[in-house]
Length: 365
View 1 (cartoon, one colour):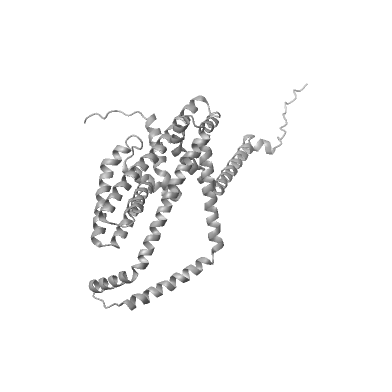
View 2 (spheres, rainbow, N blue to C red; view 1 turned 90 degrees about the horizontal axis):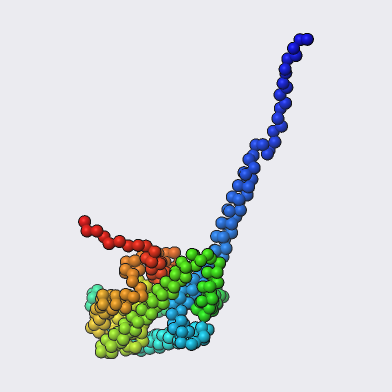
């Protein structure tokens, strides 16, 4: 029989979607979509919750600041809630006393300015005429003052038209302030329990790092506050004595202003603090203003090179350039809140990094 040819018939394969698209590709697309959606939702939530997050951050660092005092009272038998309340009362009394004193200073200076306005106007006209060789009179000054008063009146009327917006802003600030006080109280009163709750979700090795960072933050923030308070006290006492000797009115209020503002407002606080007593002294005489300006400059150098290094050596060891840069960075990122919190945050980060970085002696070249 003739040998039959072995013929193989090729059957075309059916092409399906599954054979073209890998099985992992739909899952990858789904994961990418979920990731993008999660990022968008996260940023949207952060933008909406920015006010609450700011309140929480401020409250946390205020709690760090008062926690050493609360711990000191708790170690002597006080309950933490009662100890936190006592520290709160002391701080509020100090703040209210400062605002009350400054309010009295403003009222006294405005009253004095109004009472001495005619005499000051005559002196100003005489000085302008003699300096710039003009021929002004009191009537000219009165006319300019009338124009300024009219402009101010229009501005006030326009401002009064936006009473609803001003009231809403004031209410928002009030609620934020109450929120800061409430969260600060809870963070300080329940500090140990709050730390334990945070650490309970972390493995033991991470817990040690978190507790160490927490202790450093409390130490540096509290140290910053107490060292600044001590520097403010020294500054207030020194300036009070100088102003009493020079016969500057409202010496106590002005000295309190210099002490608090120069220490607790970063970067520009020194200039704001010194400007007010110089202006008040200028209303008495130019020589008195020069004397108090000279004293402020000399005391600032004494504070920078003698007092501050000794007081902050064990609490806030930070180079002035680093502090200045931290304040600028904090203000650029978070505004006034960032500027106020920049120094304690930077000090905490610096101490925490320093605890884990090994330093070596530099070999001579």
